[in-house]
Length: 381
Image (cartoon, rainbow, N blue to C red; front, side, top):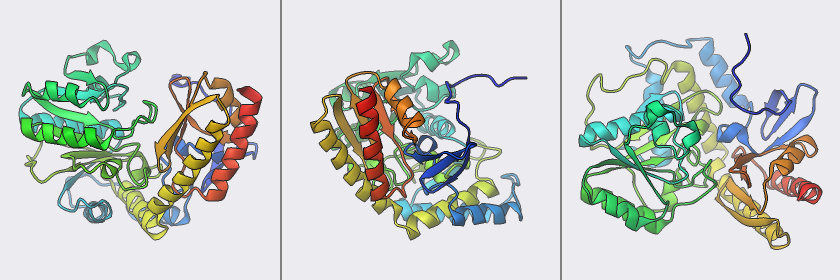
């Protein structure tokens, strides 16, 4: 039996990692500016994280959600204090797509409606309703094209208001910093106006913080830069630092109904141990402040580079979520970065390098990346 091919792969196998570096099976060291697609929040193989998972695995790896799990309670309390949403409830699941799927379902239960508004270029997942709310026809199968979702341009408040005023919208779902969509950023004016319009029309506001959350933007959540308070907040990726996990933060106005939501593996003992360890490290090592500080330095250096190189048309982002837009496709540039300069980055579209490093990235590592990027650009741009 062979693996079903779903991604084009570099002919590299990563065998180990530490902090912001990984090594392949031949011993070659790489600077990781991709973080396994924004998943690695506290760095690869952090000793506290490794010890916490190992200790839990040796005690109890899993039991069902039919019994109490004090680790879930502890995680919810810790997360509430860390992000400032202590009055919200927390539903634990396994992935970002699952988080968005359940958030949209909750909004529909709460309002009795079935329409959704989403932003152009949005990526909310690959499961049923989450993929229908994803603005990429290539990954939306005919079975998922059910007419629930209307896509509107990000930051076009008038367009969103016009749809909301029809009074039949269950939810608006927004990434305040779009990841796969190209590091496109919602404005404070848009998000605050959207909050007011949702309130006026009885519509649920969902912020998808799966990629931009968990400290990546230099605040715990990206929407906290914009002065809004969503009804539902979805999280995944950085919450487990590689352990599959997701969740929905749920405002107090939602009434829980037994049996309405459910999960087999969500919030299992190993996952909760991993997530608690992540919060331990984020807090003890002040990684959110580090993301803001190092991210500002990296953005400044990249913008200086752009001023002197017309190949770069824009640099944008917040904290350690950065997009570098080029005037031409970047396949050769990214390949050169990996093969010759030994740096992993992400991409968006055909011409945007996407930087999603672990939140422990240092100034020295950021400067090292700039040096490697300049050499790669000289060779390919």
